[in-house]
Amino acid sequence: MIARAANVGQRQETCDERADRLWVELMHEVRVVLTAVQLFVAFLLAVAFTPAFGRLDHTDRILYLLCLLCGAGAMAGLTGPVVLHRMVTGLELKSETVAWASRLLAAALVLLLAMSLLGFLVVLRQITGATTALLLSAALGLWCAVCWAVPALVLRRRNRLRGVGALPQGRGPALAQRSPGPGVWHVRHVPHQPTAAADPLPAFDER
Image 1 (tube, rainbow, N blue to C red):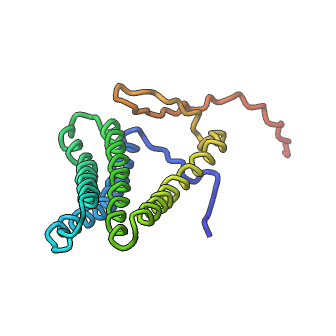
Image 2 (tube, rainbow, N blue to C red):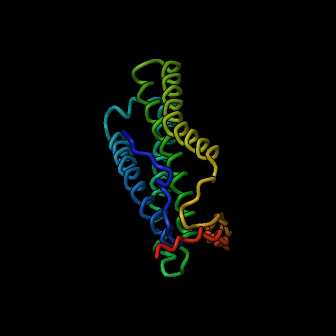
Image 3 (cartoon, one colour):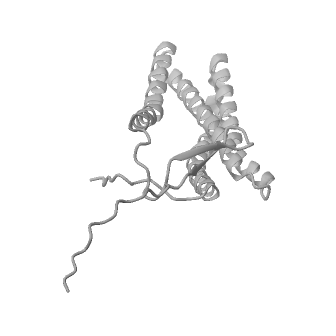
């Protein structure tokens, strides 16, 4: 059972606190994906020194080369946020750093998908015919797209339909302010203005 409430997920945090939290979450995602990419690239590098690699035809060698390049590109995209963070540390650009690191991670995920499909295509071509291998790889790519994209699209659509009607207690409407950095927005909540309440009923004097 998943507990749900009207105020679940509503945090009261400053822009800096939010940037720090998003950075930590993004680094956890990078660690997970980077491990998969490292294992895949290590396997690809080892294959090139096996006797079976010499039996690959010209088409398989090209596919292998593209797969290896996608793996190298994915590793560059996943290590990019670390380099970016190290180069801009102390410049008070945490929100912009998070935005650029998110873009690099998204690009690395696309390269990871391409590397996986190309790698399976090379293997399947050795097991089945070229047409069957292409169809199976296309089906695998479609399944990966469904697993990666459909849940996110459904949740984003549900969140958009739900709207921003419910506001956290004690906070007013959220105002998005664009910072000088590319594509970075800060959220500022305007406090509610107290309204004049009606005078309470006079108390009875029991004396």
